[in-house]
Image (cartoon, rainbow, N blue to C red; front, top):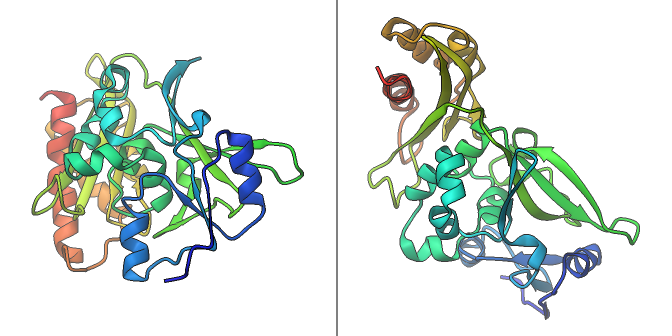
Length: 288
């Protein structure tokens, strides 16, 4: 483990971005991923440790212009306690209810879970289904600049994102789902609240009479990153909600996933779970 030579705790986003610009910085927020990974040797501390817990621009949950902005420092517990998240972003709220233990929820931040970029990341799957985007900030030329990246483009692989070493994740922006949108999150594991998922599913749609509209389906732990299911979504979009079409969509989803065999489940078992549990989740969404 590399030794930490300096420690800084900036009090503004501008100050934090300026520190990152100097290079060789480890960012500390909740620490629930960082500390185990450095202790195991997966990650190494950089010479400068920057604690961002006191940066006000990274906090809070607010809604404006049809978008919910969630600061990168918002904890999983804060998301669970938010009436706005529960009522407007139900898929994300449900995932937080399946996230680790109370102690971890109190410390773990949404920004940390996103930047950790685990293929099985609990919040990433609903955020992907909700068309979320990340807000990044940096000072490349001495002035603070921000850019927005769709979450699906931000995640590049296990533990990899498109965030540069000079950028800080500021917030996650989630467009409000259309009126009447209903969704459900499912996570499969030996102890679903505490274990890393073998698979996870976030699915939702709105009913227009008997037809399904604005269909969203995302999976976790079945590819190098959380992924959407375009084949299944296309089959369901504009279709009448019945058991036959739901079974067809569940089979179509197998064209989208690329699971592996590991300690939590085999490739075959993950495919069986996807087909069977997606059908159940969609049935609940449709209220059949």
